[in-house]
Amino acid sequence: MTGVNLMRNKGKVIIVARSLPLHNIGGMEVVCWDLCKELARLGLNVQVVTTQSNTQDHNIKHDNLDVIFLKNTKPGVYSSSWWREVSRYFDTLNPEEITSVISISAAAVSILKNKNHFKKTKFIMQAHGTSYGEFVSKLKTYSIKKWLASSKNILWFFKDWRYYRKFDYIISIGSAVTESLKSTPTKYIADAEKIIQIENGIDEKMFELNLFDRENMRRSLNIHENALVVMSASRLHEQKGVDNNIYAFSRVLKENADAYYLVCGDGPDKTRLSDLVNKLNIERNVIFLGSMSRDEIAKAMSAADLFIFLTKRVEGLPLNVLEAMGAGLPVVTSEHLSFIESEKLRKVGYSDMNGAAEAIMKLYQQGKPNLRMSYIPEKNKLSYAAEQYRNLIA
Image 1 (cartoon, rainbow, N blue to C red):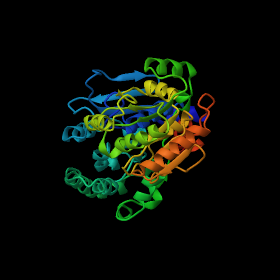
Image 2 (image 1 turned 45 degrees about the vertical axis):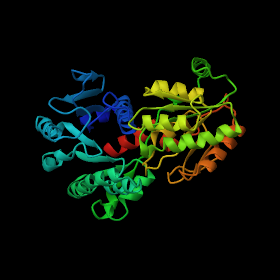
Image 3 (image 1 turned 135 degrees about the vertical axis):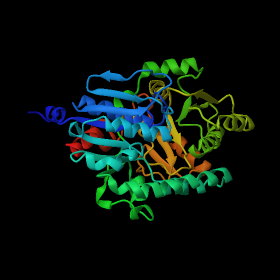
Image 4 (image 1 turned 60 degrees about the vertical axis):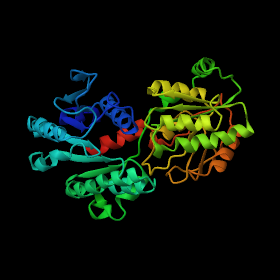
């Protein structure tokens, strides 16, 4: 009997997530959904439990992948109704039919109080960060609003203390998260032997260079084929460092006036960023493209020559950088991220605008935009990540 058939016979893998891409196009949502689809493709019987959707009024059933939208929950967010309805849903299930439960972040913690009913089920948490790490990140913003908001992370730390040890495994999605889990104070509430690192994986085929898309998108934006095009893709939030990208790009323009910056994404910081662009008198060269689907981002990556991400935030393993690597784009990113520098990836201090601009120009001068190929590590490919999960579940 094949490994695929064995997994089919063993029962369901239930993935619990508060949001999917149809709720919110964010890194965590994309990672979750890609993993669900890949595990189903490998033959596992996957069921996703998530919050109610404003756009989807019925459950989804497709081959080995079912999506259950819990009624009476708030779309895309944790709430008292979410914790209640998740518990109620699991009360209706036969524990003998469930191979494992994968909690995306804290989504499934309300089930743990009844874990003893699921004697043969592995309970796994996918950790994208830690409460203490988020607390430290917000303190570094020097924003009173963020400092006040950080009190929620302290509260979550004590909630983590109640739940971490009840999971059979904690999956860290990157080395920064692993380090945070194994460092003070989180190491006192998480068993080190339960922590396993399986890094985010992407479908690199989605981001392969497409010369047709490159030509079409540049033409639609009135950018000629020989211009330097820098891009970023992230939520427009102060901590994502898009303002740093803009400052660095303004210095690039002093070296190369025939350059453009494509800002992909939307968010609360858009007005401030637009004002900054106007203040620097570079509005002709900076193009805000707004919220984009992954297919649209892939087309933008084909049109671009380089990717920039000067985030101020302590990130686990940013999906946008992995996607840029999958597209073969040279990358300039913050030095505190865990990526390894190479000929195509340079790291600088997130506030080092001159260093970032210099790195952009050097990478552009040595690159061949029409001949680029993926340079993503094997461990960051979706197929590899899904196989690691399957081995853990088996």
